[in-house]
Amino acid sequence: MTKKYAFFLGCTTPFRKTNYEQATRTVCAKLGIELVDMPNGGCCGFPLESVNEETYLAMAARVLAMAEEMDLPVLTICTGCSLSLVRAKHTLDNDDEARLEINGVLAKIGRRYNGTVPAKHLVRALVEDFGVDNIKAAVVKPLDLKVCAHYGCHLIRPSDEVQFEDPEDARSLDDLIEATGATSLDYYDKYACCGGNGIATFTEGAYKMSGDKLLSMKEVGAQAAVTACPFCNVMFDTNQRAIETAIEAELAVPVLHYPQLLGIALGLDQKELGIDKNRVKVDPALLGAGA
Amino acid sequence: MEVSIKTLEEAGRLNLNHCFSCGMCTGGCPVARLDANFNPRRFLYMKKLGLDVDGAIWECVNCLTCQERCPTKVAVADFLNLLKQESVKEKGAPEWIKAQLDNLKKCGFVAELGTERDNKKREAAGLPALEATEEIAAIIAATGGDIE
Ligand code: SF4
Ligand code: SF4
Ligand code: SF4
Image (cartoon, rainbow over all chains, first blue to last red; front, side, top):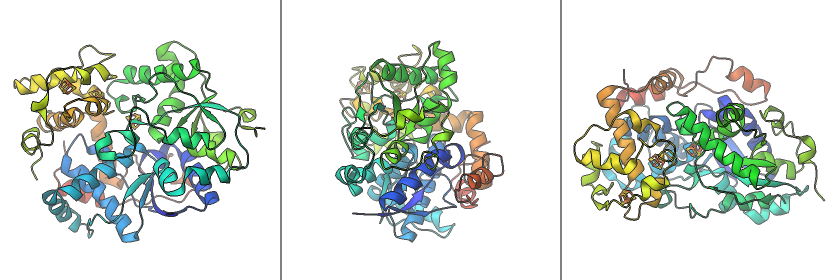
């Protein structure tokens, strides 16, 4: 069981979702998962994937090379970061010419990509390395709560490169939710996108995509939405007011980062999980211990 | 490593010629559902015919549903991403990407270290400070990622 990771924050989490980072650190400490910081980790390259292929690849390879120097697998908590690193690894491990060229770039900053460490998103690390049963065993306050899981596109697609689970029938996040005692409800278009990537170019459309998902969750009786990506969380939580205006409907759906949900079930303090920083207020009674 | 729609198609990484026009890509696309002018299958044929695929491509949210569902494994989303790269080369980058690029060159993150969002706020939350890095600027310069 791997219990030690190079903790890659990316850009969205450390600047905009410190509550996600707090919850992750608190929960991992409780579970005995050691996170080694990468304070100068910088960006995974994802935002430049649509600008220049080589720039993107070299930026992602840099992060993987830094983790290699630490001799640790990378842990990400952003689905964008995880896909960026997973795809780059896929390309560099299968294309000698690309690896040679990218290593030429990395040589200029004194680094080298060898392909010796994997990159995993927290959800995948918990399922594959820690184990759902071990999470169940660690729960001290089983939750009496109905929630809906939002996977985040880049955790599950494209499946031929991610090689994790069936993107039309994914279970990982549902299983992790149910390990806390909460019920994970099915809802319409469960695996659809939050629209986050379109926020600058297709703002109204992005709000509509998020709004449709939140409405579907509400329809099936969800008491909260659960996310596994800082940007999906920006869409659902930070932007919920704007979404309500755009779709002319009331939502009021609290949104929890998965480690916030897990943290409550592990008996951790709500403040240490950053729940006070959630934009849509979470009724403390909602997170009270279940029977 | 010359990456373009042409080179990747030749390397068998896009499979654009496998398209038999079934429309699954457009049918599952969340953007096409909201904007009738956005149609990944049509973008594919426009490109084949040498027509200019205009700014609409930037509406793509990169959800990869089209690519996932294509029955003949056309890399539809990768193709759209390459169209974005071509558009940047020919017409320059959209403003919001330029702003991110500026920050990346300055500190290595897409947000700016040195604003109210940064280390002071992190310290208050008991989180370790972030450190700026010049390595990203060096990578951008070495790979021609700097756009005006
Ligand atoms: S922001 Fe949207 S596109 Fe990005 S990972 Fe989250 S769900 Fe996917
Ligand atoms: S899903 Fe694939 S085969 Fe069908 S139209 Fe789209 S690209 Fe062509
Ligand atoms: S990746 Fe872009 S084109 Fe493909 S389904 Fe998603 S939004 Fe539509």
